[in-house]
Length: 221
Image (tube, rainbow, N blue to C red):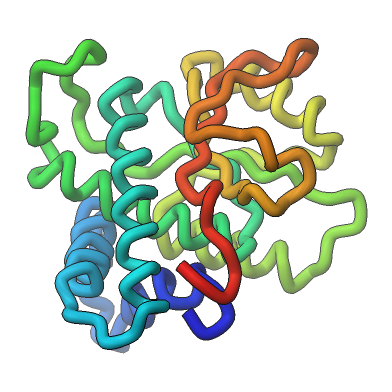
């Protein structure tokens, strides 16, 4: 990546979905959006990259997507969510997550494998997400979260609270959620000891934190 892993991974989905034409064609379904992202991500992974930076991005992307796929095997769709604040790390994580959903659900009706402990689940109309709004939000950030949530079919619950209070309120509103994807990286505060799967700390709302991009670093793969 030129400025970081997020730039190249996000570029795999650049330009999708297209703005509707004046003739008002039927908008793509959530599964259509996921499948388009899968095709773009898979195409990037299949490329014979000429630079070490891009080869490292490919390698890290494969690791991260394997983490997402493991989470999708552990939990049903109603049990998982994503913490989304519109940041680059969150957006890259979202793109990987939706691409993995299309891999797992090649058709909207059933997953590619049916012997998981969580059983089969129909493909949802939207994906669950939580947005903990900062105390002093920028209008541009809120606008971006709203626009991309619509673009990528996120069912976002917003909370103008502290992180702990907001997550607690979210789990009260979504009691089936057992795991939340988080775009934390190891260089972030309190990220140095995290793994791909970490239960929340004592005293925090109880769920599994899933960190697919924990070992991504700016400037290299």
